[in-house]
Each structure stands twice: as structure tokens, then as C-alpha cells.
Image 1: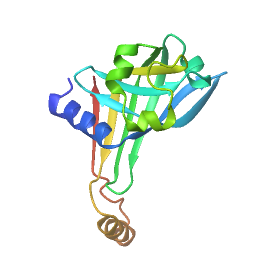
Image 2 (image 1 turned 180 degrees about the vertical axis):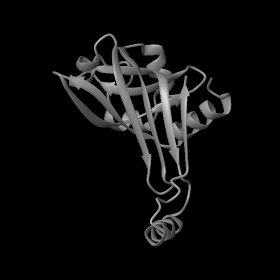
Image 3 (image 1 turned 135 degrees about the vertical axis):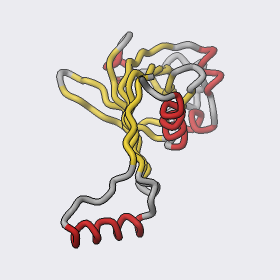
Image 4 (image 1 turned 90 degrees about the vertical axis):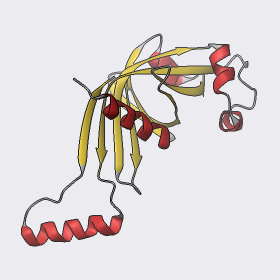
Length: 160
């Protein structure tokens, strides 16, 4: 059983890392692209405001996806698998609208080609070594001397 604190920790890591690599299947191949994400734990969803284009078509009404987040400065990494669906839920688009969305979609949340990708997370994994690069280098040097792998930090797996 997944500990509630572990789930909260993964949501916090997702919220702190604004850009996700969204991976979808396209013609039998996996394709990833960077997307600005909006984590909403109370909704149990991660949102992406986007334009109707190929990525929306790839997802269609519902599709399995993977989201990968990386914060190399903090040595924190997250992978989330879940189901994505697309919509043009104008109320939710208006709620989520920000200057970041406006920069990419100047037509606004009511434009006919603006869409919402909603990912409902199912499983997540967090790698967190939370050490500075200097500490990590010291761990690598020690590993080379002792011929044993460095401590990579904690790994947590959750079911949402």
C-alpha cells in the first residue's frame, strides 16, 4: 500500500518542476515533447494547456502516457504513468489560464484551437538524492576508491 506522505512528496516534486516530457505513442513509436504542466493534486490531475495539433490527435479521447520530470540541480527525477484525455473544457481552461499560456496562445482560452490535456496519474516513481553536485562528485570518487556504487538516494514508488 502506498503511504500518503509518499504521494504528497511526488505531487510536490511534480509541482516544483514546471516542464514535463510528455511521451505518447505515435504510429507505433514513442514520441516525447516538453510541455508546461500544471499539477493539481486536489483534482487528481496534471493539466497541459495547448493548441489543437498533432499531440492532441495522438492522444485522442483517451491514451496511456508517461510524464518525465527532471531537476538536475536538486538531483530529483519523477516518472508518472497515467491516462490522458483531451477536451476543450472552457471553464477549466479559463481557471488554469496564466501569462505563460497567454504567451504561447495569445488568442486566449476561448479560441477555437485551444485545448486541454488532462492526465490522470496512475503510478509514479521518484528518485531523490537531494545532494549538491559537489557532494555527488565526492560520492562518485568514494565509489571509485571503494569499488562500490554510490548511494543514489531514495526511490519511492506510488499508486495514485
